[in-house]
Length: 116
Image (cartoon, rainbow, N blue to C red):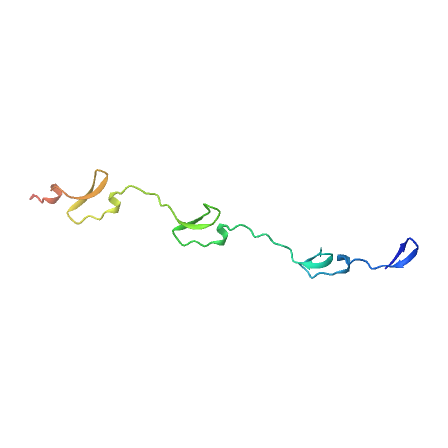
């Protein structure tokens, strides 16, 4: 290029610049060591999350220390009841000290057939 220098016009070499460079899509020009270079953008990795993890049934994702992991789901602990117990014929369920137990039924009038 021509530049006016002290004693008149002179041809001088322009230092290379990004104006002279066309970079491919997705990259941009940066001067590195005085030369234009096309560089890909640096994508900072996102921290891992529960979206990256598929947990099996009965577990759920939690991030206790910055790392997602599958942990056993806590099931509510209910007290045992007679609904949990199947008693054999001739016995019935009765709660004793907070526990369901099968106990023999005492005879009742429904067990006796009276004559008319």
